[in-house]
Image (cartoon, rainbow, N blue to C red; front, side, top):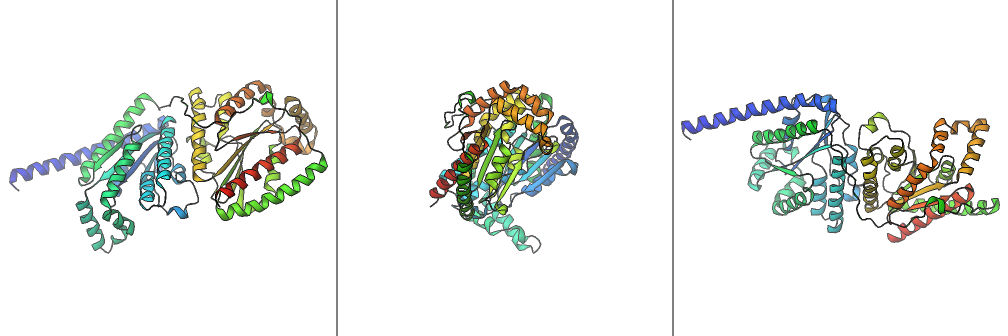
Length: 491
């Protein structure tokens, strides 16, 4: 190499270092602006084994305040060991407003590796690609800034790096059998990576970095990130517009059309309750053994009898295999994330039952009517909820949704009973009376909710609860029937 060439190369190296230093400083300054603006940022770093993902991440975070960013690394367990939906760990890690989360590999590698191992079918892979697109779009529409990076190296370069790592006692642990397998099947992996990026890069694009030039790749990644942040800070957080997809919806009656007269005698109730609870207890053992997750969602009017209904479902269940999740107003750390986050984090494991007392449907009822979210937010939520529930049923969950229904006269009588009975007074609040005054508005919102979110895979059931005994028996029958069908489908 001539003297001139050496000087040119040295000059280019110095220029890159100066550029990298300036970009780090810019990101450090932006971190405070992100905090002030409440802008949540996700950086997904994917790429080949030994491509330099860890090095790139270190360059990104080197000057940042560690209180306001996190790096998360997810081990990709074999599918047979998974107890949650495949997006569960990635949804768990979604950052709060004003913070940065960097994923050291994520949903791309998860999908590709499991397809290559043949742990999931091609049809299941297609569903996961669709779900990834939906997940990313929901985050973007909720105001998240998302940068997706893929660190690329050629097979020969990967071979050299793997050899260097394996020859050093201190670094050989960093090369796994999975990495060696990926190297052997480099061509198939490249084809699958490129296909995945093509299928998931239309709305939120992928950026491919040349991993053989580490400083240049770091400069490019930081330039992309700081540029995106500048635009987001200038324009404000992005809020997606509502749109609807075609879901297989079930025809639902309006609440005013529902006959609330059905009732049971005490004798009928006792006989049926005993038999149905016995059967539900038996089915609980079977779904645990077959690892079928079950999600029961309760919504309804105040004083409609949700609590008593839930108790009759829970009583015959093994307490080690179910949870009841009462959902109240979101805590500050929940408000600081996309609204579905607090439900992602409460999902049951396979074989377990989770009963939600109030659910994600608060978005299209109380949040809509009380102005806790924008009109675009709640109108967009119908589609987002249908996508979320489809992901749960694609995972294998049984999802049942109950609207516990009473008329206004029955509600008033129960309110008065609570008010006049000392041991029941805690159940009645000023908010209950205030909500009662908005009955027509809530009824309109509930009717729209039932029409737009009762899908074939996650249906709504209107439970007539003027007679609580009838409501409990009807709910038990619906749950038992659904569990029996789910068990039969897995024989």
